[in-house]
Image (cartoon, rainbow, N blue to C red; front, top):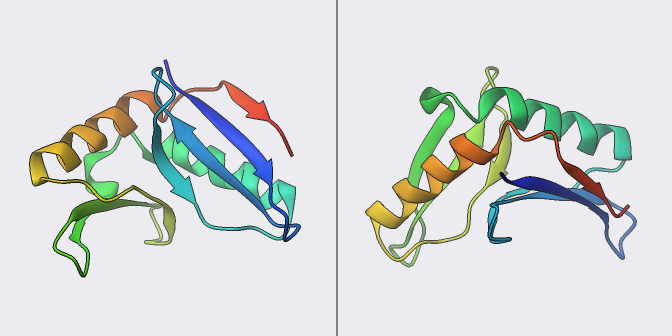
Length: 109
């Protein structure tokens, strides 16, 4: 099962990554001013990641597929890396659905 890694950056802001069981990053959050806000972002990911309708499938400026996970209010929870194909992106979404509900949080903040 996957896990979250919560960190505080050099800028003093907090962010988290959702990792798969193989330690690959699946989803990266925005930066937050407060640790509690980052923790709320993790909770939102846990709740929304299993729902297919919360994913927006996109193509970046270089033509590479990626996805964003959104909350019920359409706010972006996190963004994926760029993938080499739409099928790879779709596999990333499936991994996010599977690993997102994890309650394992590695707090490095």
